[in-house]
Image (cartoon, rainbow, N blue to C red; front, side, top):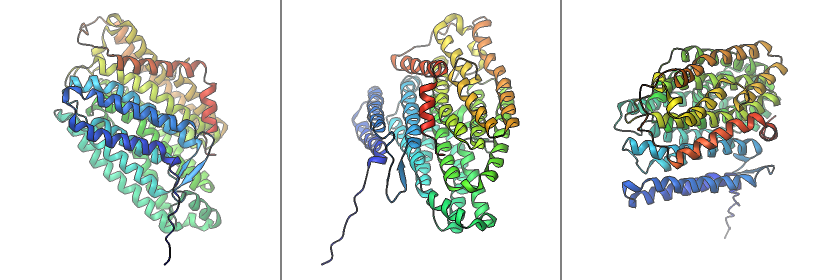
Length: 484
């Protein structure tokens, strides 16, 4: 009788994903037995899962591993991005409880969804097969569709969830069709094998099926990172979604999109660098220019930060277009810095806001610096970092992104990036003008700073200022994590 050999499975490369999945499923079961007034404890339990998953990452640094027939990999690149994802979800959980209690929709399903979304992001970062990346993208997307419309009593939240679902499904079709055409042209979905096929069969670059497949994948990934002209969903979804979920979506999924996009392009198509660099050059200019120009006219602070998020995707694309080690390391550093400064800003927005997503206009911050000087100072730090003003992590990140572009010969791209960054100062300073130079209209007496939100703000301030003053440690990690 012939024996069937079961191959050994190495779970080490996906151990953080396994841990988060287990915690998410446990939370779903526990949620059934927890009274509604004690749902906050589920958030603390989910934080434990995030911390445990974080500890499993540390030992993997510098120890490359692959598993599942090389469809997932543990390398410094994936570990760095997984660290960003864990930080993003932890900070989002910290600011969630107070918001959802205020909105009276503190449902326990929130925390499992956040953990499952993080699992999807991690699979996107560590996937070395187009199907693995797509699987991670779908796990992330389905969770985000629900999170965007999580506040079922709010019409704008319902609208945000529906819009994100329809447009997200449409963009996913582009991405999957592009993957299918690439597979048809090369005979493989493994990114390393695609690179080998392209290098050995240079004529494939003239194959219409292959070219269209590349372009369709670029469209799909551009939607996920909110790059122009595929950014139209961003302002409506960011405005309508619950504020903590907007914070989460603006940092984590954007970083996951860049992680997957970079792995596919840099590893699978290195011989076509001249072609995709030109495409990314155009995307970068369009994205940061459109994002900044429209942000100038926004009165709603969530919409302003939504268009700001589009512009920041454009800055990251500058480093991507450079296609060198400096630009790639700059993207990694910038994605981490952006998580700190953007989620920190949204933490303040959660505090200032009222039930029903009221009090979200820039004018509503009039006199905030007088009534709450410490919180206003923290908001100013986040806005300065978003504008790229020293000594903040935002300045260091932009400096390395633009330096990578100059080193690659894209001087005009760097100049356009600097001009866009200068233009963005206007709408960030506008918020500070209202905080410090306008008379208070309200007393802000409804604000309640809980320990969880305070911890989030402290982490964000340290994460913005420390790398801005002493960037060497994080930059060194980013340089060790580049794919080139």
